[in-house]
Length: 341
Ligand code: NAD
Ligand code: DAU
Image: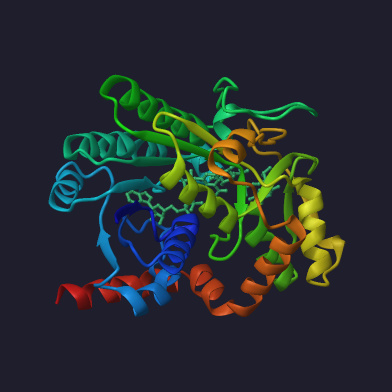
């Protein structure tokens, strides 16, 4: 089986590629990644060492590229496309929405069209619970909850979900959309809450908590998300949407305190700062459809996942230092110059 994975050098994409190559020996993966600030080739260093040029191939490129993407899809007989590539950080989308529209909307459209023309038999589009908007103190999002995105990021993801839907209904293209809650785990870029808090705590720096810190997220360990995407790829019904959640609702303050407790740091580091504009109050995912149709449910508890995650960051200080200093980008530039030569 040949898979095209986009955005495979990012947090979830790199975990997915590692998981799939380890779990199955019957597939090859081509990773198409633009290597934005969030893409880091080092995330797949072990995969490259074991599989590069054999079961794993890397293409440095943009999902918006209207020559490269159709050419790639026409040239190789892919059995499926899995679209992880995106601009993914809400705060960045508030500062500058345009890259979000370009990659998340136009890029997804370009991929869908190229996959349609090439007759790719499966397209899995990776989306988010944020497309549903925000919840009050009770209730959960189901796949039938109306879309009500509140940030430029979530609006761009909802737009791409609707394009995926349109390609199924108009062209009969076998598109599946997955929507997941907040991921955490190894290789997450330290702009997102959990690695950011770990980083600040380990340096004894103030930890910025937006607003009153009582916003709730439903945290899922990244491997559980990857297993969900795998299940959707092999067992999903074309045209369907599948929710994945972690069954682990926590306020941001709970999450921050857990990290401070596990790292032995003082709660005095907590610093309340101005709230994020349009900040969604609560997310919670109902995933009964994924359990019934895909046999999927999250397996890693929040406590176990946090212990694993913090142990990973502890053991991978060099990765974090390189990301923090920007050295990982120089490393990649040097690597590409060598390859081109
Ligand atoms: P990330 O920001 O860590 O990684 C994104 C990757 O996409 C990077 O490797 C980047 O270089 C690549 N990329 C960006 N623009 C590109 C383009 N135009 N062409 C090719 N590659 C490009 O993101 P993530 O957290 O790993 O999220 C992956 C996907 O999962 C996204 O679609 C996101 O919306 C979705 N998602 C994320 C979460 C979460 O909690 N992080 C939860 C649910 C869904
Ligand atoms: O729900 C899924 C989404 O989760 C994904 O689609 C997004 O790609 C991903 O970035 C994530 O979005 P959030 O905005 O929920 O994640 P973030 O880590 O940025 O923030 C989590 C919560 O923590 C949120 O309520 C804002 C708050 N926060 C965040 C940061 C970075 C703080 O209080 N302080 C901070 O410094």
